[in-house]
Length: 215
Image (tube, rainbow, N blue to C red; front, side, top):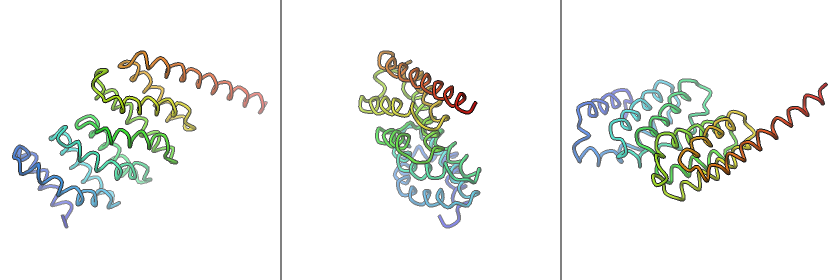
């Protein structure tokens, strides 16, 4: 894929021409992953944007058949989400959202998102990952049996921990995630709701103390 623009256009043409319906196309995807990841990591905004558009085409066209590739590309996309160049950060963020809505996430991918949400030092990435968990719950967790129990436990513990995140945007996203989680798992969601209320009370208390101290 020496010429990113030309190669991307050819692959888009194959998708639009419904070549993905042939078994040979599915076998070709793993061979393309590394070259596509190199383009995503290029850091030239035009190349990154073009590559992300192509990945979105793959996800929308192939759906769940692209789920293993989603797992492959997520780490690279997460590094771009926090880039200062707006075109790059918005392209990677949008692609991640398309992945979640159209191809979903493997159990390993959910674990990766959860770990990043809990442990990454970058507040912007933690907040983004909180949004991704929320989107995953809203679009893929349709019933109590739609997710494996280890995934449910991982999401539940992540929300519990990150309701206390130092970043207000991340906390807000996790409060919304509590509502989405409670819709599917009402009994388990009650515990998260209590934690959320407790954290909110503590936050307001600390603010009031700070105001009185300044006055």
